[in-house]
Length: 169
Image 1 (cartoon, helix red, strand yellow):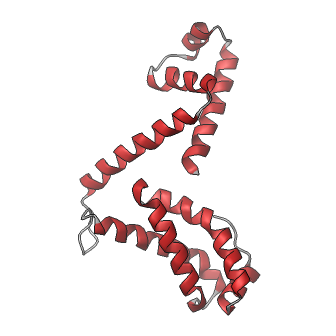
Image 2: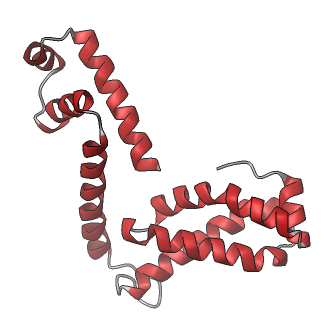
Image 3: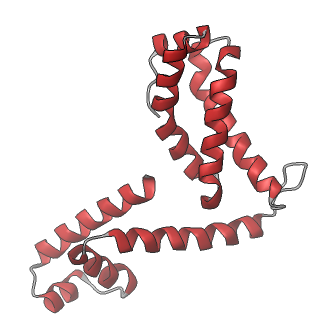
């Protein structure tokens, strides 16, 4: 989580419009990151948008700037629950139909991973597919590609960093 500067949060709470806009801009990546870990993939954009809207309208109601991060995370979590409830995956008492949520999440996760792999440059994509899909050893990949063991390990490491960055965007 980004450390929100206390003066920025104080100014936004006090009604400074420029500070509020800067706070919205600063908070958006953290809101998105938290929504990705809390919501279904299909609901992330909606949860982020709703959270930014709540932040814009309600930041002035905060009593302490120190509670800003916790408040913001609670808003994201509530929006994710509301969106899931609207799909009928959670009952009105907050109990999830875990099997439905997990099945949906697995399918969405597969799509996200496939898109991330497709986004890789060819020389990284080949190594990731050989290692993680075909389950070849590092030596087998090196032999098949005519590369040293160290080169394969380095490319695999860089590819996984790129995948992680893509998935955390």
